[in-house]
Length: 277
Image (tube, rainbow, N blue to C red; front, side):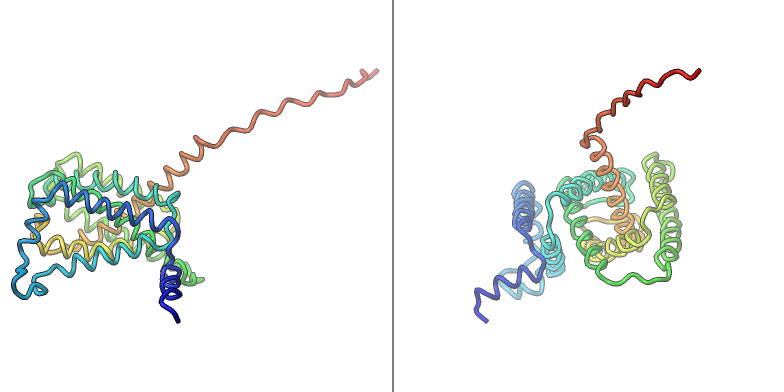
């Protein structure tokens, strides 16, 4: 097999599309802008590496692995028409979540920003990665037994109880109360049990590595000082479900707005009938 043939087969095997190039270009541009605008933060990260010695011992392989995995995921089956919705919801949803957490001091960043803008782009990138993981898991056969309904009503109430316990010290904050109400509404109004469970699992799985990196590097810290707390890991799953549900609502609303209404049909003229005698 020639190198040219191999190069052509690899993107096809990974599910890359024409839109994958556009998405990766936007991804690299975003990372470049973050590094350029917040260069002092990048300098702090690079300062931990002893480039004159065994640099590989201090190099952040976990961070590189996370971003490499997400880079490959977001390019798989890229479709800008759908991905634009995911990016939009992830961007504003991530901003809302970061604002809630930092304003209530459930967690804080080492830069003391509330919230730091440089962390917001990570949310839509993670949302795209989770979407790809859910699509991949959808290829497996669906069991006849309604297992997803059962699993749903186990993991989501358990998560809510864990969330209530974790955010209890901030229950006097209106931001926390609104968050609890929103999560309760999402849990009590399921739409697709299978997609909800798969999305939660994918979000929590990716969230574990993100939280492991952030808390062990002291990039952000939770008030419990756990690295990471179980709630934070599972909260990524709940956030992914919330983003998915929000995207469905926005798409439905957009369809109603953009779909032209059918013109009213004129009443057919009734034929004149002779009067009955």
